[in-house]
Amino acid sequence: MIVDNIENVDLCIVGAGLAGLNALYAAKQYLPKNATVALVDKRESIGGMWNDTYDYVRLHQPYKQFTIGNMKWGLDRHESYLADRHEILAHFKRCVSEVEQHLTVIPLMQHSYLSHDSQDDGIVQVRLASKETTRQIHTKKLIKSVGFGIEPSQVLAFSSDKVHSITPEQIPQNQQHIIDSNKPIYIVGGGKTAMDTAHYLLQANPQLPIHLIIGKGTYFLNRDIMFPPGLDKYWKGTTSLDMMTQCATLFNGDNEAEVTQFVKSKYALSPHKDAQQFLLGLLSQSELDIVTQGCKTIVRDYLDDIKDNGDETQLCFRSGETQPIESGAWIINCTGYLLNSDVQSEQYHSQCGNVISINNSDNPLLFSSGYFLPHVFFQDKIKDTPLLSIDHVALKKANAEAFPFVAMTQLLYNFYTLMDKLPLKVIDQFHANFDKWYPLHRQLFGFTKFMINKKKNKKHFESSLLRVKEKYNL
Image (cartoon, rainbow, N blue to C red):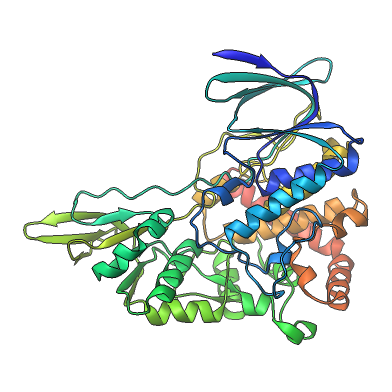
């Protein structure tokens, strides 16, 4: 392979998705004018997972509550609008263009990270690979922002070849065939991808014979409660900070079943009353109604295989149950994207203090790590900010039901710590904060209540998190 050494840069960011672009936004506030930043991603263009995901995906939350730092959208849409992937990618590119007015951004797309070494002089040597070339970048700081590392789903393999097995990404090219065939459609998975897929197909044709196979089932935060529309936001609904604080205060490290029932009774909805899994997704009542009223059956079991048994083809479930399936049926793999990939364990910051890693194995701030960690990093406070971190992938494998409540508790505990380290301006500029949906007086009331209880809450949160780390050896 050809080795191509490029000139030194001030900063290298690996990953050009939401986490990486938030790091780039932070860099604009700390690096001098025209400082050089290498922006690296294995995909063809910036945008991370949004380049790969299914075409009909939309945001969980109103579009203004999904952005880079405090950068404004160019959309002229109703405030409740859920942006689609093309609009999200366009917004990301617009954000990068805005940063380029201050920094010299060197885009290295279709380059994969190989490794890095910190030198004695404080320079980090980063090795990258493209199709024909390896590159060595020398940088003063390195931010590895792989985030959740979400990859496109794969088709499910079955013993029988009498069904069509596809992924959500393949639906558009097969959509007319699916509708015209009038064959049963089995959506495998109970999370947001499954809800999106069922909703999309039923919107196209409400008469489609759709069946959901949801495993343990997933419940979702009710978007109508978390983001009440119009004037209702002035007195109705619950802020995310308040909801998370209630959950974290109730959670003690052992009582995830109790907290599950609490959330389901106050804030959640689901296609099945016995749903057990929660990955912090959002769904509206109207979306749920379309899915539950349109689907022919909802099976709470796991699909293990599809086999031919004589003249009959059968769905084979983990429970041991079987069910006949029509030849030519469609199977759509909507099983989980989030926290299902194995990642190499890596601390969120290096001992030398010039490398941070935003990843699943050591993630102190969940979805907001990509925004806050770079700010602490650029202020040279990363080693002096005692954030409590937990391997989320290992936790989800050990106890999926406890995962969301541990994540909420950890986020709030670490947020208290950040409040002692970061200027209020940095926190206020985090516009992906769901609470910014609400008028200022509700934001201030909730934040004040949260801070008044800081000492008591932080002690309880720490006790709960240490209990979880001990119990699951995290």
